[in-house]
Amino acid sequence: MSLPPLRDVITRHGLAARRSLGQNFLLDLNLTARIARSAGVAPGTLVYEVGPGPGGLTRALLEAGAEVVAVEKDDRCVEALAEGQAAWPGRLTVVPGDAMEMDEAALLSGRRARVVANLPYNVSTVLLAKWLSAAWPPWFDSLTLMFQREVADRIAARPGGKDYGRLSVLAQWRTVPKRLFDIPPSAFVPPPKVTSSVVHFEVLAGPVAPARLADLKRVVDAAFNQRRKMLRSSLKPVGVDAGALLEDAGIDPTSRAETLSVDQFCALARSLEALRGG
Ligand code: SAM
Image (cartoon, rainbow, N blue to C red; front, top):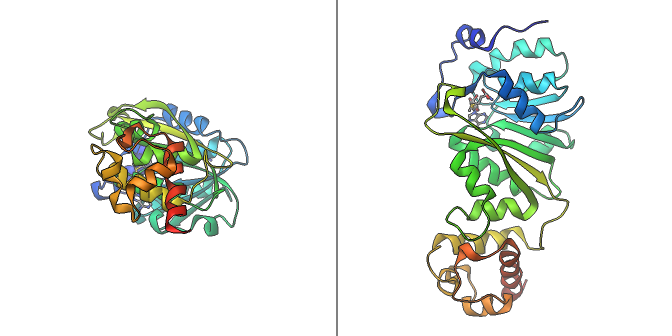
């Protein structure tokens, strides 16, 4: 069964893009196929897709042989995707709903998936933080996601520059994020204002250094909330004496957040746990 061109799907289903849902549709089939390849999708791969929209990327994933479970908030798109369900019987499940609220492990019945998504920009970092905060090992083997380029820069940043921050530490603690390629605004309908980048995150079996997630978030949040201050001052809100914390972790109290490695943030998180008394 051959499917109608995506532009026809958009016209027939009246899918005028809604800014509130971060809708910028990708209709270039070379690019959608490239994303599916980058995600390592092979026949039989289970893929969790967020925001399939009219289904361009979804088609590429199905053509690469995936079984796709897709969550979409816009009912108009859910209807449009019904055509795809008929073309690939049993291989596309469209779940109407909000990805922010989804219990993915339950939805996927405990099967591990590859996450592939051209994310709505207004929720992309919140969704990423949600997935990176999952119980580990998580319900996914990898994430292949599109972001605004400046967000991709922050995710992959190494210590020592202005892009290095919360997202870099959280992402690099338990995954290896790699920026793969950029996509210009002109590839989307309607074109967004900024360039997009595809980032692939390979899940590590264990973290690069041990830490409790809640403690790691606490020190990272405090440190980067006042990133220009020395740590002895920026870490005051964490609830223990900042000087003792830094000494216990073996970190220079006059250093600043953006110079600390992920390992050093983990040391701070472990010291926080120890000084608080577990
Ligand atoms: N994947 C399609 C593509 O590449 O052309 C559409 C991408 S568009 C940038 C983002 C999609 O996510 C839209 O279809 C939008 O309706 C959907 N969306 C927005 N917020 C969502 C949410 N919280 N949960 C699920 N889908 C959402």
